[in-house]
Image (cartoon, rainbow, N blue to C red):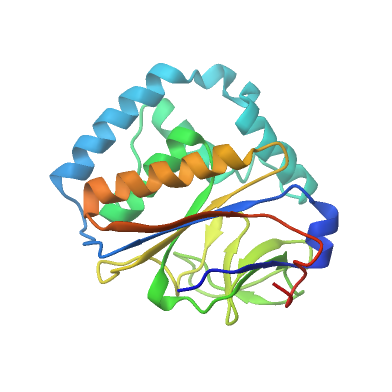
Length: 237
């Protein structure tokens, strides 16, 4: 799959430093759970509990960057938390991540560790090229676990392919393209925010790919950061 990301002119003008990092991995074997992911969870839980303090988490620069970004998008980050922060808070409060599948649990661990929001998709369910744009008012979106489609608002930032919205940026993924135990090829997206560096995004995605390989096998194919350029307007890549 040749990966291209288009940026609509309005997003490029509003958030000129915004970037996403995409990573791909092939030949994975996705299971409900296995001993490798259980051991990885145990190790990463211990690591983040030693590194982060729940009382001072809101002062962490990565947490702060995404919270500030959420306010600019019209989202209250104290009610709808960026996914990386939400996962980290759960573990710092003594909980554990939900068991979904070895691949999803692996990239959730990386998101928690780096505090960078991420999505994981079944690559064979995608229809590239991808676009970062604002939703059309009333555009339907069915997220994972939703009983019926949500009508999006025009101020919602989304990642989409040519057929559907893949993610309400950066906290809710589409049900139709989710990773399942039948998935053989995974595409990961690390979502940036103003103040988040290209290096931080790439590190997060590489960590997620390493964790997936540890739990599911496979071979990494692509790791690339995409950001707006003057020519990257919607439909012109």
